[in-house]
Image 1 (cartoon, rainbow, N blue to C red):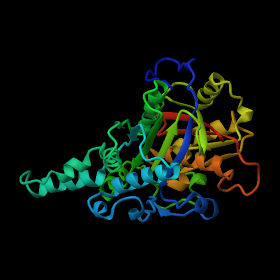
Image 2 (image 1 turned 180 degrees about the vertical axis):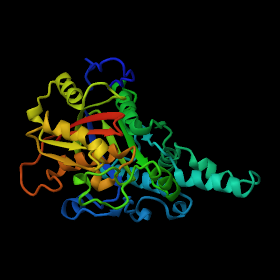
Image 3 (image 1 turned 135 degrees about the vertical axis):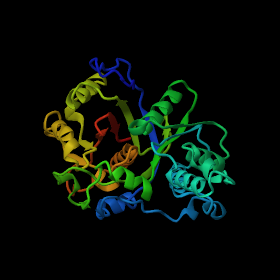
Image 4 (image 1 turned 90 degrees about the vertical axis):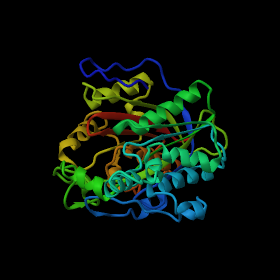
Length: 362
């Protein structure tokens, strides 16, 4: 669970082990439809980005409030409410959110008006709603939840920081259930800026994305929330046995994952499915292929960014996908085969933030 920020020393696997937590429910707004749709007919995209399929928000949010919310707030709130509805929970003990970019549309609106009005006579609304903690705050306001509420803004490890805080709260008996999620959005201006750095393909295709051998990937966005509980009670879709994140470790991926599994007493053969963050960018894909061809040479493997695109909190979508796979016993693209009982997720955003999740079926 510790995060190593010293790149000059060898990464040490912590001796303390994380106690398992249960994922009672999960909700997601993504470029895909429901999990059943993803299994049968995953949505395909062309170009340089994948945009979320937004639901009928009136199912989750009062119609009078919807028009006052920006797009990312509606996405985050809807994913959180869907999660709570699935779990039959009305009041979590804590709400924790991870986001790298925050409310970009409101930030853009505020900065644009500041220029247009020459920094005078500005309405504070867009500024207030542009802060990164707005999604978590809106969820709390709708639930009338006065419990612990925090937002983490740690670039490619924002969602992981939120998850570790949630697990820490439960370890210290400060919370029995925690609503935790990751959310980021695309807006036109931010996408143009990021595109200047060569992050994205000009003519991407999600159907062939992970097989491409060119530079760049396809941008993505999404919101995913989970209700975590220390004790298994009632409905449970998956169990999170362990997770760990690092920052720019000196060790290769194979050694990191091998050390992680050894620390938890888990054999590689017991992993039924590997899910990687391979995104079709030739500059990064070799990192994932090395892990697949060495440590997990005989393990069924899929990638997930052809479904959601690349963004800093995409690992939240990966956790949602792996939870759905374990709950349904079905894997996208795998028509035959036994239902996986144990899944390992490995993502490394821009090769700076390697993260491992180990999940089991309930």
